[in-house]
Image (cartoon, rainbow, N blue to C red):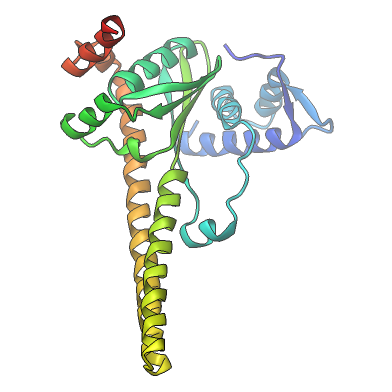
Length: 267
């Protein structure tokens, strides 16, 4: 169960009540202080006709939300926008069991390894070793999440039988790679334009290479990054699908997993 004594700030209260109202309208089914307990907030919501079930889910979403991420800014944000992909879902199970199943899937099927670990939050990064490369090449399915820098998961209690899972894939590495492609193409175009200028070509002809290459590379890089973000979003939803099914976590280990587990003993 959730922590009924946990305090909820005014901003969180507003978000929770708004989200609970949204859930109530979809499902068919203000305090003067700066904070109150979750139990008090649920009672307040019931007084205005909000379902306790929806309030608990909204509270779980607020706990999974954590501190707001800083807004993207600078040249990268201007050219390519944000660099994270999110997905969340309410699944059956207690947080510890859900996190354990999610961790097994991320390590055994997505071929990630744990980067940071906390009670309600875990962060994985793609394996970049030799076996990781083999898995991506011969795994038999798309490994879209391997283009991410890391994937973070937060699991929060909704009620005794359900937990909310929030996944975030950090695609900043792919965004920096896209910017690198634009920079390289622009430099090549600038060199070509400089050469044409030295050769005495008129200005409109001389600046054509840098202009065309810069615009074309930006367009191509933005399309490529958008595709990577979309594929990562689909992959996160697929992880949540597998988490709901849970059966895949108990499948026999693959040959690569057997080899990987044996390597430490062979050293």
